[in-house]
Amino acid sequence: MTRGRVQRRLLVLALFPALALLAPLLARALPADAPQAIRALTPVPFDPDATDLATRLRPPDGTHLLGTDDLGRDVLSRLLHGARVSVLVGLAAAALAFAAGTLLGAAAGTLGPGVDRAVLVVTGVVQAFPALVLVAAGAAMAPPSRWTAALLIALTAWPEAARLVRAEALRLSASPYVEAARAAGASPARVVLRHVLPGAIAPAIASLPYVVGGAVLLEASLSFLGLGVPPPTASWGRALADARESLTSAWWCVLPPAAALFLLVLSARKAGEALSESR
Amino acid sequence: MTRDGAAGPGDAPLLTVRSLAVDFGSTRVVDGVSFHVSRGEIVALVGESGSGKTVTALSLLDLVPMPGRRTAGDVVFEGRDVTGLSPSELRRLRGGGIGFVFQEPGEALDPVRTIGSELVAVLRRHRGLSRDEARREALSWLSRVALPDPEARMRDLPHRMSGGMRQRAMIALALAGGPRLLVADEPTTALDVTIQAQLLELLRRLRGELGLAVLLVTHDLDVVAEVADRALVMYAAEIVEEGPVADLLASPAHPYTRALLAARPTAGSGAENRSLTGLEGSAAVPGAWLSGCRFAPRCPVAVERCGRERPGLSPVARGRAACHLVGRSGT
Image (cartoon, rainbow over the protein chains, first blue to last red):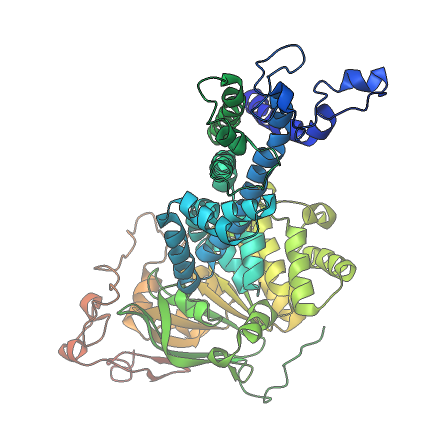
């Protein structure tokens, strides 16, 4: 896999958070007297939460590029704003899981059998449950918000990184330079953070895009079940849930969020493949 | 340079090891080892690989790798038992009281950290220096171990340096914390002979400058002859002979020491014509030892008693040897 290809794939993946961040600018209701320049820079001039029962379930046309949903909201506007939940929660969850997993994995591989066993038991317990069950149970107890969702998803996603890093850390922990660091009086924290982690983190980095993909899907499932971000905030999972009623008649309500999820997870996997093959 | 903790009883040795035993599971790899190292002394710990010399050295810092465990004996450094130390005292001892130089400098230096950052970390940890002071001190250590262009070396990663340079950097790292004892585990084995000679010269010089004691772990009797004051010979987890290097090399008492000396290739003594005198049999496997003398199966002069009864260390000339035959035959 060439370097350019890796970069291209990472760039494609980066489009999603970029669109999510720009959504409030790209898709918003404009006052009637807005200048022409602003109007031209706002391709979707509809508030994502503005309902209009007179125009409900309109198929795509020149005004509503992807049609409207059962409450008359613009589907494209909700799609862009939904990315703020789906993509940003997915990324935040993956980042949290990565940080926690790599630290725990490095500690487990370095600090001796006691710590190792403790971490392994916890990873085993977390991995033994279906992630959705754990997250749904947590979401039912905690106040719903995008940060709750990110935290809960991270809590189920960290064991992957922990296991990958632990395996490397076990090997490095017995290596002469880590032994030499100990013999020079380095504290356990320093041995883990400065000497073991840098050498053990590579496989976890390569798996990171996969974790992002998994986290995005998990968030969508959570929102689909109504346990994610509270309404009326747009999210892809919620859009799919809302479209269930009109599944056969209004394809434009289902297809865009489903396609967006599909493309995001696909590009995450492709980026992950590219990363691990380029090593 | 301040030498804190040097207030131990005037004549007591810097390091005393008494009846040390280390087990790996049910296998004993160090068995009843006792020795001492005095201030400013260079002591060699000699033996074949597998004789337990590296584990002995590591247990001075309580760093025996898992699943090894010290099961008996004391290690007393500057009047304090190493096993009684708290984790933070132990970290001060490692690098601050006893410096450690490892065999393969290419593997014992962190590949992703510069020499400078490692030195600065050690100096801040053990000497409490500020970042700037530590930088200056690090530079002076690099020149002290005669590394060319210290400024550039500070920023170098280990792979950019040659083996000899790395080992000099290792020595600087081991000494920067101000230790009174330097433990060097086969410090020159991975290097070619000219570099080896330079490094031994460096060790000798530093011993003089810093009043440093050195425990030199090696299998190389030429290195021992070159720098050590006293030597301990290990075989099958035990010390079988000890004494001043001059005596030991001139008139070895233990048959194993004699065999080691005989197996040494000597330049210019017609070594090409004379086949090297190898040692019959192979080194005793830990855990498969006999009740008698562990060297007996390979010993050319063993008598019936050797298979039955384990010899203890008994005085011979200015040293001691563990052999039933010394003192009787006079050899």
